Length: 142
Image (cartoon, rainbow, N blue to C red; front, side, top):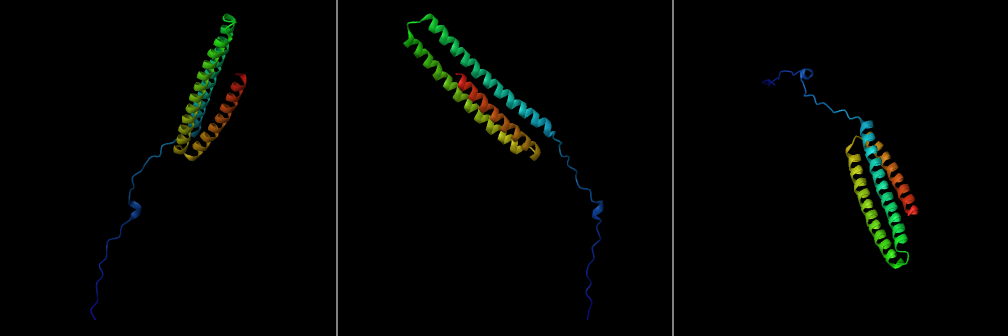
């Protein structure tokens, strides 16, 4: 019987194989969370101040009109109703802005590393709660 010769291949030392190295960027999750939290708080603060300022202006205008036109209550009532309608429109715009802000923050939360996303989510929930409290206080003040 004839013997079959099996070809041999030279051995390859995989330990000497150099793989390309990829640097993973380091993200300071606390800094990202702090910036996002600060941005949310600033937005809430500005919205609250703008709404409060509008309420104060409405009250001042109502008082000034009442002082000037004491007998024209129907006209004053009409002006106040118009102002209140505009304030309601402004409030609706703030609600829409808050909705867009919520979507943006939630999108950012998904794109961040898990820990940073969780911290941002917690800060966002705290900001939502603060927004609701501020809006409740402003509505009772009006």
